[in-house]
Length: 117
Length: 117
DNA sequence: CCCCTAGGTTGACAGGTTTCGAAGCAGACG
DNA sequence: CGTCTGCTTCGAAACCTGTCAACCTAGGGG
Image 1 (cartoon, each protein chain N blue to C red):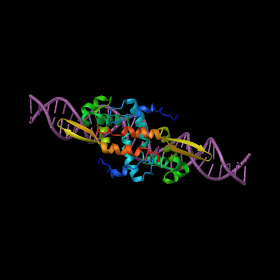
Image 2 (image 1 turned 60 degrees about the vertical axis):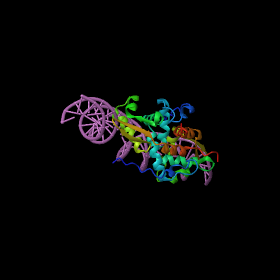
Image 3 (image 1 turned 90 degrees about the horizontal axis):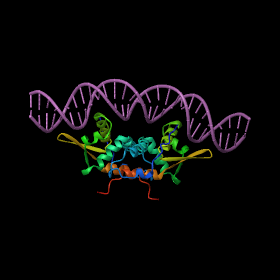
Image 4 (image 1 turned 45 degrees about the vertical axis):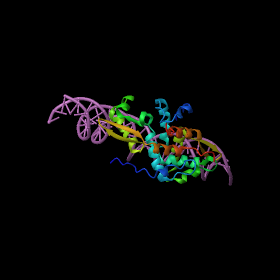
């Protein structure tokens, strides 16, 4: 039931937004990703994961950094996962998260300003 | 009553997310901007405005591009305005919108992946 | 085999979003 | 001045989100 929102072709996401009008289909996919970033907690989570040593972070390190309960952090991580921004990986007792770098790069590229057309 | 959400120092927004953990304050500001982008309609609106000839677009050109009523488009434009992503400007009969390029560049920079540290 | 810990899932509820129709406001034009 | 058009604001209905408490699952030790 947790629809993985297909994540269209990576190419679809890379046309700078200021260069040509984004087609409706691509807009839906991109908006879903930006929506996932539209929460301070999730932004910080992604930031902590992406900047962590080795590019990975354990949930056990993420949770105590917020004044939120475990289930809530778990929920936010799930949103990031379904938006294709992070990937999780159980390793023994703990679950590790790492950022989906290409996906982040795509989003960055979309917002990139045309190099002074 | 439409709190303009102060938009902290532009510098605050420019530290790549994957380089260091985003502080809570900056996260709130950034998340507000990303949240505004978290809707397909708004993403397309911003795209149409930013890619328009002359960098400006008239509401009268934007509205008919969607299956939505005028008030709804106006609402979405307001959200983009309050997020600091666009600026409006009445010119005679019509209202023109233009993108806030530096703001977009900041967001793009935040998502930029560390150039292989 | 039993229990303990680390995380995820479910259910529920307050609060916020999207959308519309109706009404209001600002210029243009006769 | 009166009215028309373009856009915004207001009010309300349907829907989606963030959060927690309670419960469930996976793995590691006694």
